[in-house]
Length: 357
Image (tube, rainbow, N blue to C red):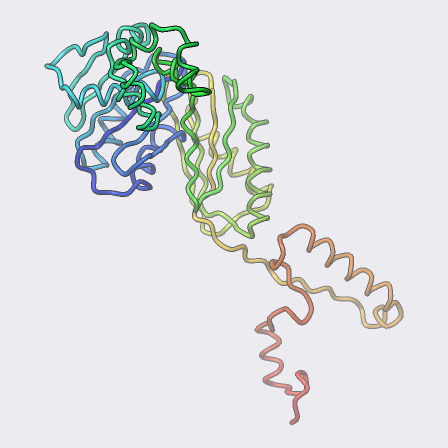
């Protein structure tokens, strides 16, 4: 079982990317359908505890600068439906209809649907709360006299095939509070991310996953001709809490040895409390790779006597470099910029560049 949080901001003036960046403090699985709402997959297996509530109250909601309604439910469908139920008909303090609870905090209102009460909650919901469906599908349901979730779940599935075709099983699942869709990992365009599910209880068990993450990040960075100056690691634990840590660097990195070393340093900084269910690694503050110019020197006597062998050696080096990096990164021969040293020598000796004294 997973817990999905739906956040609805009443007077938020920021952008979708800003909202997502704030919610990443809770989980790397974040979806922002619009600028004032977000879905967050809180992961885990155990019921959410005080750490989760304190994270909402202490960092996430205050940083958004807007009053919010936060709903917790077993799936995306019911999380947003709970928010819609509260906003359309706000009940008094205490208990919401259908086995749901609400509690007011300083900057947000928390609504919780208990998993064992899902049937009681969904049976009375109007079909308008079946929000993943298109408006024309909902209108057709109402035309057929199916006005609530309970009306749909109480009829045979075969009766839905004629008017709705392949949508019939999905509509029936929704009417019973079943939504198998996942909240995707949030991948900003200015980051390269790696995500993995895992079942580990300590740092030793995560080392193999970190090796795979380092290989993926290094290869992707080299293919794009980029290096990172910031690396972030987030780890899901089964108690519905995500531990995150970030490191910044003065120079860009992209080679696999450096990436793996940085990954392991981040892992050692985390305090893993309980089994880890998912891991997310993100390379940020991307910059273009700055490669050094390489020169091959040979003794002049050796070069003159073994010209063909030297030329073949240079060709192998160039071919090897070209295969390791994406096109345009490796430049050789006349495509190289004139070095500062060569410019100074040309200034002293114009004949080096073919000029006349």
